[in-house]
Image 1 (cartoon, each protein chain N blue to C red):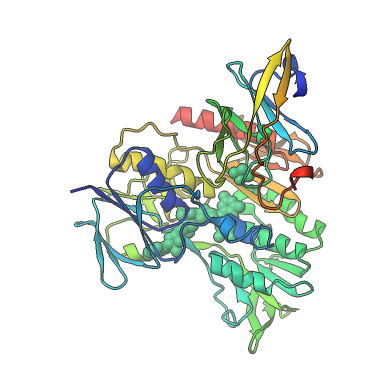
Image 2: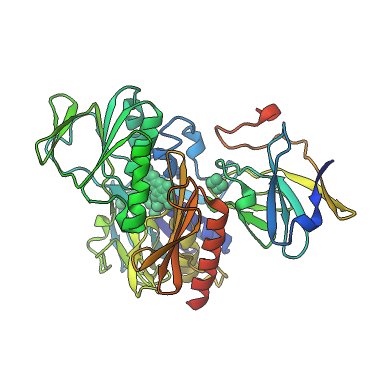
Length: 391
Length: 118
Ligand SMILES: Cc1cc2nc3c(=O)[nH]c(=O)nc-3n(C[C@H](O)[C@H](O)[C@H](O)COP(=O)(O)OP(=O)(O)OC[C@H]3O[C@@H](n4cnc5c(N)ncnc54)[C@H](O)[C@@H]3O)c2cc1C
Ligand code: FES
């Protein structure tokens, strides 16, 4: 009998797993189970070019038109349970799919606002194509939008909505937006983009409830200020989709906790993408990294290890993500959290284009580029070369 | 044939973006092992300049989202870009780089157009 690889989750990490298995010579069965109805599609444009209408649904497809991976797609079906001893995956309807190897790629879902009134029509989250279609239909010129959360997705929605002619307010509970990923100094600088583009950013703000009768009409803040709104969208983070693995011995402390190559501790079960926290050797602890490039690149490493293909694969590179806000193309690599100082290698924060480098002692550990693609790319490569040589 | 620049002005390991209106801009690469290639400069996924990308083993990685393109053929390897870019024929004569533009239709990303190809 042919060896069977079952991938659970049919998005970027799942597709990249199937691709990596084939590229590394795996000729067994590949079954990909996904609870969305769609073939894998790209999420980053959902807050950017798809939301503003410059990209169509067809443009979101992740597979090339002529691509044939010989995959059995089981779509619109949710995996309910994994039995690690038989490595069988139970899906809705009672069907069991038995595997030799399982890759968990179930990603994450957007967190919903846990507030009174947040179920009213006109209140949105953004993770799926349907979410984006629903939000897009509400983003009409002249309407008032309140964005809850000034993280990357919140900031991108604000910038797209402003471009579409809405009146936009962004509410952030923390004193500085993006302080987690970028640090306080650069979070503050990037946060200023809102004001510079006529969007009202309010930090240190807590929402009490969402107002409305048949539809949202506003939000009331903890200090009793009421902000009128026709549309509210929450960008308040994501929760890993790992509940279906509850009955296993997997460590689900922060998504699926893995070693440095995606192994879960259960033989023949690996995890990749937004649902997985791989051991970061540089920090000596697992980190769940919710970036597109991680979901793209890491599956090749996981597959080589899981299937023992013997393939030479690109070592895991330092985290990299991008974000497009207003006229700024942001790119970040490495880490900001241990930095004791920032230097500007190109431009300054008052310019439209600059490269900020994060230092820990005399070691450069990360960089933020804003409209600074070439110097940033050079830095990213140097960092990747240095880090992967150390491991 | 379009005259690009003296080879000496494009050190090995470097790339440059060249405007060739009304055609879409092209990227000319001088690899570490001394070969010179030319591709359409605009990534087929979104508006990124491949001349800003990273060249390794005869491929250029888009500086934004990880698709790589073969410098010889323009072929693409992995998403998010799904189609390749055009490759243009390069000759180096008397120390000067010349490019003969491909007559195929360029694969521009959604929302991007240039002059006659619009
Ligand atoms: C609006 C938006 C904008 C973004 N922009 C950027 C950006 O600019 N830059 C960047 O680096 N990253 C960005 N990201 C993050 C990036 O999209 C993710 O890192 C990437 O999608 C992760 O891929 P994944 O396959 O691990 O998970 P996901 O894309 O979350 O896919 C997981 C899939 O598994 C399915 N699934 C879940 N549970 C089950 C189950 N029990 N059974 C079957 N199927 C299941 C889910 O429905 C989903 O289809 C953005 C994300 C969003 C939502
Ligand atoms: S712009 Fe080149 S891969 Fe996205």
